[in-house]
Amino acid sequence: MHVFQNPGYHSGQGFSMSLPIASMADLVVDDLDTLGYWGYKTITKPSPLANYQKVVAIRKGSVDYLFMKGDLSGNDWTHKPGGTNPLRWNYSSPGYTTWTNEYSVNNISNPGNITYNSSIYYIIYWAKNVPGPQPNKIEPAI
Image (cartoon, rainbow, N blue to C red; front, top):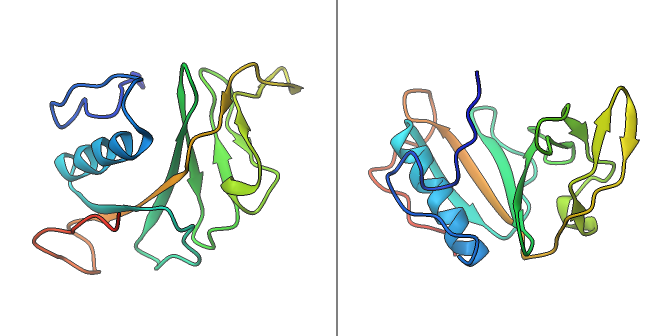
């Protein structure tokens, strides 16, 4: 069972929608570290990723935030607004257009009513116990 938690939950930090998107991305990196992953944030869309890396993108609007998950090529993105099914992003870059909380119910697509128009932060991460760089500490790219 998945339980929704805001960024900062796993690393024991507070969260507020008034935080800048860069700070939200920092909380995600800190959570990943607590959960056993190396990671860093960047504003540059990664492409392609090393086979041991994963990437998510985060963006916020005035009342909510949303993540997108990328594939190894960095050109195929999915997101899962709320309790709906995961949806494939129809563009090769999360930065192509403003995000919404579009959703699908019974295979019928519905437009969203929340927009996410902040800067986009990409968080590249990988497990600490797999082949790949094993730094003592990764300094944020931004």
